[in-house]
Amino acid sequence: MIYRKRSLLASACLVACGCTSLVAAYVREAFYGTTEPFAKEAVYFVMTDRFVDGDPSNNHETQGGEHPTWQLPLEGPEGEMAYVGYMGGDLKGVLKNADYIATLGFSAVWLTPLVDNPDQAFTGDEQITFGGAFKDGGKAGYHGYWATNFYQPDEHYVSQDLSVKDYTSAMRAKGLKNVFDIVANHGTPSWTMPVDQPGYGELYDQNGKLVADHQNLPPEELEPGSNPLHSFFHNYPDLVKLSNLDDSNPAVRDYLINSYLYWIEQGADAFRIDTIRHVPHSFWREASDRIRAKYPGFYMFGESFQYSANDIAQHTLPKNGAISVLDFPMQKAMLSVFEDPAESDFSDLAPVLYLQHGPYHNPYELTIFYDNHDMARMNATDAGFINAHNWLFTARGIPVVYQGSEIGFMRGTAEHAGNRNYLGQDNIDNAVHHPIYQALKKIAHVRQAVPALQQGLQVNVELKGHNAAFYRVLQTDEIAQTALVLLNKAPEQRQAAVSRFIQAGRWKEQLSGETRQLSAGDTLTTLVPANGVQVWVRDGEITNDALIAQLRAQMKTQ
Image (tube, rainbow, N blue to C red):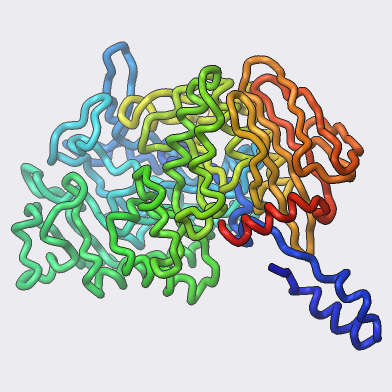
């Protein structure tokens, strides 16, 4: 593959001048993992209500009457606490800490949904208990995924002097892109209430008009043919007691897709799509086509919570909307390697990279992570988190880190056992002293400074035991760069010696600043610190014939 954007113009000028012998010098073979601009980003994931309370006036602590929505603690067996009500986090709290997020080395912030949710705790379904799952009784919509109006921001997040658009503009001014969380398959919990509650089972349009109402009826009792308020719903359930939106209804598709376009107008730079596999590919193809017709190249990634790469890869195909996904197979492998780094093997990560002949449209455009708000936090030591981040910010894909992981917050706890607990300003202010934070900041800034780590092809040298060695290579008409990544998850320093694909030239290690002048065929020998990483970078065109052959093979088969 030849990259010709600027080269052809230069070549034409040289031919016109009679300098045809120099034309080849302006044609450079291109090697890259992806040209997707969003691959340059690193994403900090914020659960909006559980981050920082920047504006106490929007807490609405008395909301809900006999079914309050504030805090709602769940007590565990040994004094542990989790909460299923609002805790006060809002857009002002995120904006107040924009510099903290950017300084840590992130360039985008993903927020849980900001749309309006019901104003009471849900009285139907089974009662949620500490550590419970798939039960919604007694919970409020603090998480944002129970929309009653897909166009209206929830009153807990905005302030009188800070609208959503104000927020996104201010974040962009801080150098941070805005990732919004969208939903298509469901609205609120919608039946099993002793008495029908306001907001639950209801949907309102942009003008505040009621357009759908489940009316506290189980799905099989809905009558879409005779009751227009039922026409937005399927007459069969999907997830727990959540309304199952009928994506085959053109009115529903317009309602949802137009809401996504509305939030882009409010400043969304990318979308994370909740429960993408619960809605047919045909819907996402239409949504993708309509969004990208107006906003070309708009980046989206979906949550398909399953561990089969062949299954989740279907969403990435152009015929299905070309929507990237969260890399759940990688997440599972990362836990196996980093929850117990002393006993695990880096080789577990090799099969889930899918660098060649894989099922994904492009594996370099996946978002990679080790935990989030819907699963237990990684149950690792500080060293485990540090090693995980060293991999996350150097391997192929776009890194995503859940709020608090920079300090190992509530490690090992599940959704209703502490994983979603309030982080708070004190934890953020003290984070700079934490070893996980300090190591994460270093490797995140290396990724920001090294384009090859963002978009370059990954060529593995070794993934075995405590050691990993791989290249990231990026060569276009504008840049030529090779990064050699060396990882050591052992509790003591270890020697690394790499001769394969070594090119002549000046190599600089990005964390220490050390430089080496190497000749072709030399071996780069170095001591990699315990639970450490080194990134050796060489700028300049690729010259190693064996490496060029490998890069060509991967370009053809990725």
